[in-house]
Amino acid sequence: MITVLIVLGLFLLILLTAAGIMKTREIEQENRLLQSYMHSMEMFYEGIQNRIEAARQYRHDLAKHIQTLQALLEEEENDGVKDYMEDLKQRYDHLKNQEFCSDELVNSILNLKQEQCRERGIPLYVRVQDCIYSGIEEVDMVGLLHNLLDNAIEANERIPREEPRGIWFFMEKEQGKLTLKMKNCLKRGEKFSFKTQKAEKEEHGIGTRIIQSLVEKYQGTRVYAVNTREGVFEDEIRLKCGR
Image 1: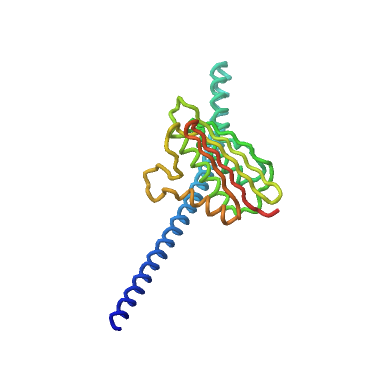
Image 2: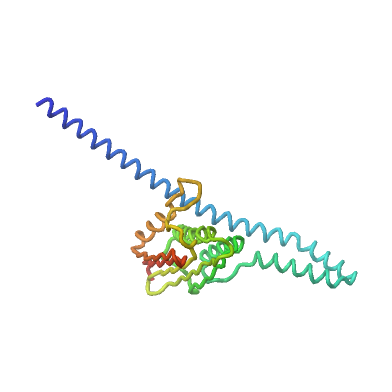
């Protein structure tokens, strides 16, 4: 009888220990998701701050630019004026936001991602319905778009520059549903995985889990298709977002 009680006690102890380990792992996973969320927000606001600082610096230097142009005009350096104006135009175009839609948050995210794509030589094609994307919390919208587009950018970075690259992004809101469709190029023949190939192991799969958690939170669906032979990934996400 005592032996049976000891065995039962040990069995119960093992169950409690296993449950504790599982709970600890769940907490650790939630913490990693939260940290990744915070990282997404930090990256977003850091990008916004960098653009604000660049615009401030441009305005600060404007008087110097005007003086330089006046000096060139006085010396009748027409070619110099033309070259200088072209350089200023390129700087301004770099700072100027493109109006994808009237939603300031979505517009800011897409402008940041467009700049990242431009720096990496990745064509980004965007078609977004012009509306206010209410019904999705701001932190969730940042997490969703940031991770979706980051995955697409990372996939394109692995493609040799002489091969086709590109990201096609579509977004609309209709009848209480938010629809996002994205297609991006992949390195042909590469084994597909949602896991990042970044060196930081703690980031592996985090972005995908964030997207999936948001799909579940907003009672949505996600359908994707992979064609490694053609080097194409297609993703479609639908979320409930109220009116």
